[in-house]
Amino acid sequence: MIVARTIQELEGVIAGSCVTIGNFDGVHLGHQKLIGLTCRRARALGLVSVVLTFEPHPLRVLLGRATPPFITLLEQKLELIAAQGPDVTLVLEFTREMAGLSPEAFVRRYLVDGLNVRELFIGYDYAFGKGRSGNYETLKTLGAGLGFRVERLEPVTLGDAVVSSTRIRDMVQAGEVWEARPLLGRFYQVRGEVIQGHNRGGKLLGFPTANLRLVDELVPQTGVYAVWVEVDDAVLPGVANIGTNPTFGNTAVSVEAHVLNFKGDLYDRDIRVHFVQRIRSERKFESLEALRERIAADIVLAGRILEEPEAHPAGTAYASGPTTDSGGKGR
Image 1 (cartoon, rainbow, N blue to C red):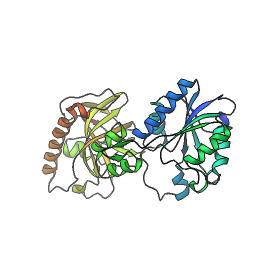
Image 2 (tube, helix red, strand yellow; image 1 turned 45 degrees about the vertical axis):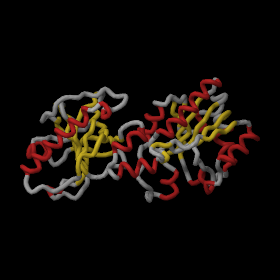
Image 3 (cartoon, rainbow, N blue to C red; image 1 turned 90 degrees about the vertical axis):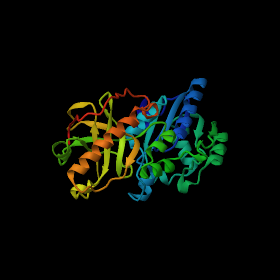
Image 4 (cartoon, rainbow, N blue to C red; image 1 turned 60 degrees about the vertical axis):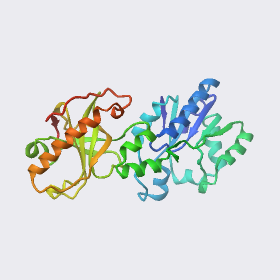
């Protein structure tokens, strides 16, 4: 997949294209269906398939930081889009100037002059242009005059509710990561660099943990989770805690993962944590021994959860096995 950051990189290069456009936060099942449809149609017509998205998210430009946390930041979003097979992803810088364009000006500049669009595929609720004044009907009218066809995808539903980024975000923030998986087509993940922690997990408790400096914005509800930890090309079973470690009187929220069946140094390495199921809420224990016993029980329960076929991460080479006290350095 070619990733372009400006329309100038593609002007005069693409003879004809099938395009889908959107923010694609989470690249969930609805987005996947839309991108897949675009790719199949492009192949059938001998055209170039293009995904057009924006960075930063338009809401971040228009509202500043007063926005909900996003499900996927750009790096992961591009990985997930690439997995759907488009030829090109165009990541346009969203600015206030772009937000002020009329629907017709946007279509002419980017879709017609830039991408030579022949067919355009949009989601059921897509709106664009100044004040979000453009919609499906606008595009059909413009397409009739400018030579492209428009198709609108109907909502994708699961459990009698529409699959949407908002619904997924609410689930993750409520700790409902198992329930969010069918909507995403994968387990929700966070990624980050392993950094120096308080070193309590290994020395005090006997369960070393990898402490993450998170890249992602959306963090599941505090608590203990059965997880898969992705280290390089290996995906290992683990248990993660999100919270403040109230037994030790901390106040800052952290993400710590105990990796099973792993011996090695994780400091300064980038890892990914795939959240499978929430085991329990975070709580304050009266003694280190009580905390130690509960962590041991959490690890056993996490191991049982991760042994289930439905808990295996799709598209990864996972490693299962009995729980151990090895967790690597980086605690």
